[in-house]
Length: 82
Ligand SMILES: [Zn+2]
Image (cartoon, rainbow, N blue to C red; front, side):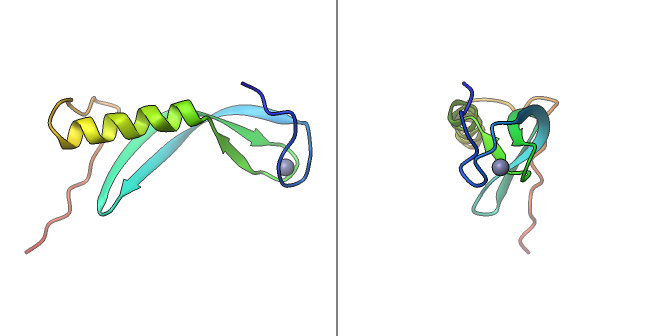
């Protein structure tokens, strides 16, 4: 799904990139490498696909509930409380 214009600068020039997306929820983190995003070439604003974010969130909570294992691309640093 392509956006017609950047919300900030109204540029129509985008580039698809893959980035390491760090999802955070309270003190838990889920690193998701190769997350597809669109970057505005004019102002550098990064746009995330809502469907991609939703899938990351779903995966995160599934891991929390031990329904899914984090795969080898995903690291979840555990904070130690002593
Ligand atoms: Zn822009």
